Length: 368
Image (cartoon, rainbow, N blue to C red):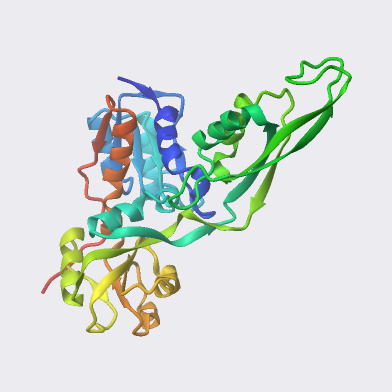
């Protein structure tokens, strides 16, 4: 079974839209032709020459990584560094490379949700919500068709507020119009002033769903010319954002929590701020470099904040408010491969999804 690369990637974009990626990032297709077909995809955290060699051996036409192969700007594709050599090898062997990075980090069911699940956390919430990513839709339609239009809007993804769906506000009023000579009005007569009892429907939607929701609304709406408004909102959106916070099924001592984290993440060394000798119940996490979220973890009253790439002086910022734990960049993101595999296998059940056997962790640990 062969599928176009773009169709494979669209499955992932539906789950974690590219609009959720950070401005500095480089998600999506990085190398290759999206219109080519492939029968296999290989998943990894980092794209290296060894991973491309594995893709060649296993006849995978697409490699999907978490970290983008090309992250910083490059001006020449010559075999001087590992990035350029890897890209050249992929191009020579007609292998496409794509990345699902901060869009998957910021997705509510993405990297941090999977990390939280592995640590056994319950009642997850986003640690830092995305702002400016919501819109309000207002549409006017005849009363008899209001339910049909409203349901179409909801089915397209609008009307979600937290754990509530189908959210809208509805107000009755009178709409007026006069149909021109070249129209085919749903109600009223041509060249005659008409008044119609209409419903004003207001609802909320993520910006990335705008086209889908509008198209669904227009398809369901009976009018030739549909009157609607879109308003940008500054509201924080809890449906996406950085990091995650949840609670353990039962409190643990700090040492027991560190032991669990070490075993789950398979990391032999954990760096942490001074122990507070307090129970751990509420846990904040961020896969990869998440020290910037420390203030949010404090505001959430977390007992511990587990992330990676914490600098020496960052540990001072914990300031006794919580336990700060550096559990390794690769280690806190290692489950991303399984996450992407689960998404693809659910949506494309008969397609070959392979997880790379190459260990791309660039950090080793020495024990005396």
